[in-house]
Length: 316
Image (cartoon, rainbow, N blue to C red; front, side, top):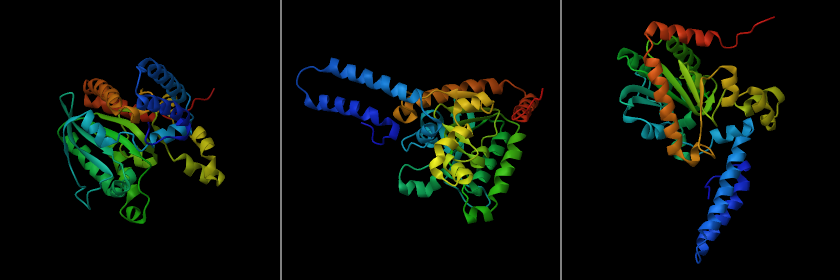
C-alpha cells in the first residue's frame, strides 16, 4: 500500500487493502482472485493518471517519494564526481553538480536537490538555491565548456530562494548572469524538468538546446498558489490558476517551449523510479547524440533561433 497518498488516489486505496487482506489470509490458492484485483487496480490507476487536472499534476510533481537529482545520478549516470563551491562565498547544497559519464561520454551534470525528510530539506533548503548555487552551476558549465563536454541540467525547484541574505548577495544578478552565459556557451546543453520547474530558479539552469519534461512535471513562472494569491487574493483559486498558467508538459510542448515529453510509469515516477530513470536515460542519450553531431557555430545559431521564436505573434 502506498505510504503517501494524494487526494485523487484514494479510490485506489480500497483495492490495495483488498489485495493485502487476501494475501494475509493465506489458505487456498487465491492467485487468480489477486490477479483480477491487481488488473483492476492497474486499469483504475492508468485512468486516473490519464485524466489528471493541471493542479493534480503539480501535486504529483511535488510528491515526496519522487526521484530527485541524486537518485537519477545514481540510476542513469556512471562515475559521478561531485564538485563543490562557487569560489566566491560557499557551497550551496540545494544545487549539486559534477562530472559523470552518460553512455561512455563525459558530461557535466547539474541539478536542484530536495530533501527526503525535514532535516535534509532544511540542509537542501527545499531545493531552492541561493546565489552561490547558481554561481556554482555557472562555474561548472564554464568548466565543461573548457573541456568541450556537454552540460546536462536536471530541474526540480519551487524557485530561487527569496530570502533577504540571498537578495543581498545578488540573487537576480546571479540568475541573469547564468542566462547570458548559457545563451552563448560553446558546448551542447540539455535540460530535463524532473519535478517542479519554478520561475527564474528553474530557468537559470534551463536555457538549453533541448528541453525535456517528465509527463507529470510542471514548468511555470510562478506556483499556482502564488498566482492565485496575487490575482484573486485567494490561494484556494489554485485550480483556476494552474489551468490558466499552462504549466503541464503537454501545454508547453504545444506552445513550443519544450522539445519532448518523457513518459512516466503508470501512477507517476515515484511508483517505479527505475523505469522513470530508464526513460530519462534513453531520452538524454538520444538527444545528446544528435547535439554532438552539430558544429559549435550551428549549435549556437539554432539555440538563438529557438528562443527568439518563442512568443512570436503573427498578424493577418
